Length: 178
Image 1 (cartoon, rainbow, N blue to C red):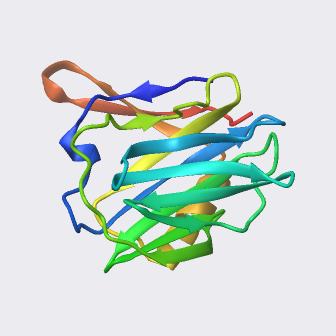
Image 2 (image 1 turned 90 degrees about the vertical axis):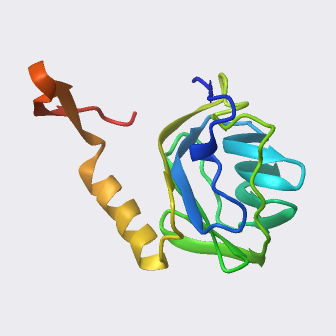
């Protein structure tokens, strides 16, 4: 398990009121109660995707500023789960494994103080993979397609190696999610 903190990088914190999507994969070990997949939240500014455990059931939570979307889908132990959070037109939407899992009215204000991080609090309790930030709110169909294509690809990645004078060579590398 690992965590990454970028510092405050404007490109990872969309401008206030912007439409965006943040998504990625999370795999959690048994018995973990709370942590963050992505975090760029400072009180009532920014965004975050977290998980919580209540009554023995682990679910996802998305936050846009002070608004919280509480998901209902169960997040299993030791299995990869795809989570997406969108913001557009004053609404935050949460998706789990490509399916809608809740929404709430939300006003997004750019966080300018807390560093963007991936896997904060995941140390020794799970993994994060393929975290992405889009400069638009993906549609439900696009999120479902992204989930299905990622599952189908089984983490087949394209590695681009830079050659002399800016030329590139693409090689396929299979890296399975365990």
